[in-house]
Image 1: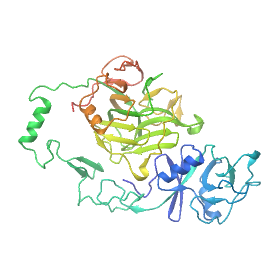
Image 2 (image 1 turned 180 degrees about the horizontal axis):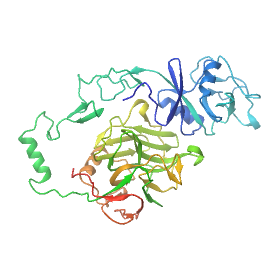
Image 3 (image 1 turned 60 degrees about the horizontal axis):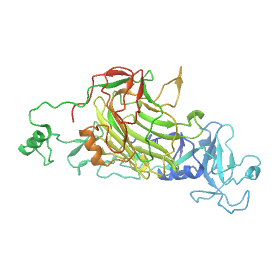
Image 4 (image 1 turned 90 degrees about the vertical axis):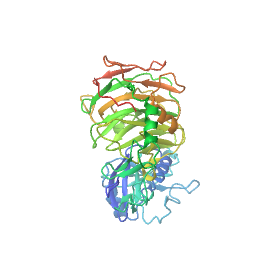
Length: 447
């Protein structure tokens, strides 16, 4: 549920002016990528109506160059002709640094950086250089919960108007105020006719073999303490392609932190890498988030429903080169509006290892990352070189892979129970090294 302090994923709030909010991105993009990313979130690159607004917003930033929504169309008189805002609003003032704009060194500089404190001034720059950028969003009040009957996909400020009384969520599910999500109305109502009767019991007996004991596919899990940097690292991972599915059984112990499940990501946070690449899947408070850096910008998908805390959940994330999807317990819970960005294009690859249980960016203490640490358990992870369908995801949730399936490039069933190696059950040999995580008998129950 969004509140008055809503901040898009991957951004930091830097202030408001009239009926708009301003944010700064955590990642760097080219000007055109930044423009596309801002527009995919329902906003635009930051514009300023007055020098006072310019100074108020930029004063919240450090001495760094940030893209704003000022540009010069191709073919304009250089260097000072035809500058304008992306919104086509009147350019009522300019705030150029001394000697700007200047097409420095005879380069074509048709886009504009704005500097934070102490300068607060503008500089023309090459549009294909990469910088963080300022996002401007208009405040639109309304119902921001997708499962509500009166959901407004354009709203970004929750006004308490959501109505759940006149319609259901998905068939067989109801809204749960405490969990802020849809839950199965009656798990024993297999045919969703509103009651549990003989037909449902026959379905259950047929599925589980009468009174025979159902053997669990899960024997062990790995426990991550959320504090010490516990992780599993897989070097020289083989078999990845642009299309991808990541799925697995996980358990989270807290509802407030950000827990990285698995990542193959290079971040430019703090200059760690020059360009962000790769992908990651993590929990953010109660939401599931799937992010990949594509050649066209940032693919970002945040779940429309909450993750359960304290019990196992099956999560899956897919990308087919065009769009991404998220699933929680087999239900498509992909985001929409400002919680979904699908610019399309290939995910930018990297040679970095894959890590489970830790996100390798942010602050460090004695060479140990102190954020994005998993507090909970992982009992199964699979990686595929294709975007699985919802039906396939539901099937593998009920019946785990064997390791020989087509397109399966990595599968770890966490059933070793001892030792420091997590064995890949496929023939690709993508074994992982366990660093700090401990074996546990806390496992999912048989689906």
